[in-house]
Length: 304
Image 1 (cartoon, one colour):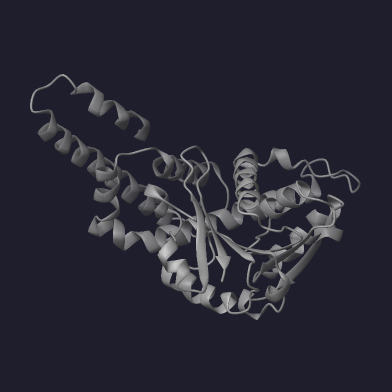
Image 2: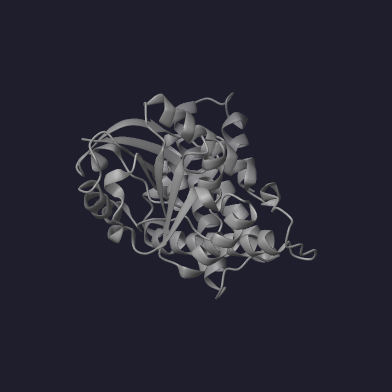
């Protein structure tokens, strides 16, 4: 398992020619990771619909574990620059996106209809969601960061909210009741089930739900913060094209908060660098790279 890889460098600390051996160990670790990632990719590729199941859950858990473990820079570079890994990253991200969608859709329906014990009046228990604490940690990190850069949080736009909009919900619950959150998603099923979830949570009054491509949204000029979900845009080039479009519509002084990725987390999500964001009419003011169970990095930029 990948957790055992960390013991390899410690085992050779007392050996001579440490620098030479360390280099070979890095290559060995990278080779093992490349094999494991390739194997997980192959197994996921054999499944037509990546809906939650014991097998699918185990594969994604392994992939997330590999992606979030802390490695040295040499190992990360060896893995991400490997020709085979570079070739499979696009489909790996697509499969991760599909898996995340089906996971959220399954849980959203479960929370709305309370699965076995349906009670129309019962309020959904969001903490039952398997990754609930990860979302809590990420949203708290993001809110602290937004407060730190002086962002107003009266009108928030969340692009790519999905069927289980936990981030917008947790953010809304942590802010004054006057806050309005606009959720935008191109998928009708996502908006339909999330509407029901918001209603059962008795917070639908604080949200405006939009089924559309975000480039067609007309409210960017009045938004204080625009949040770009990690799965919006297949790569940095597509994200930049999108940012140039919405950046031209945002008001000066408002903020963009984009979820990105670092290290081997780039296997799951495309990264977005400050210099790239800055070419789209923004000035990057903060970048945070978590090293715990939180997968996404956070980039905050101010509209010029």
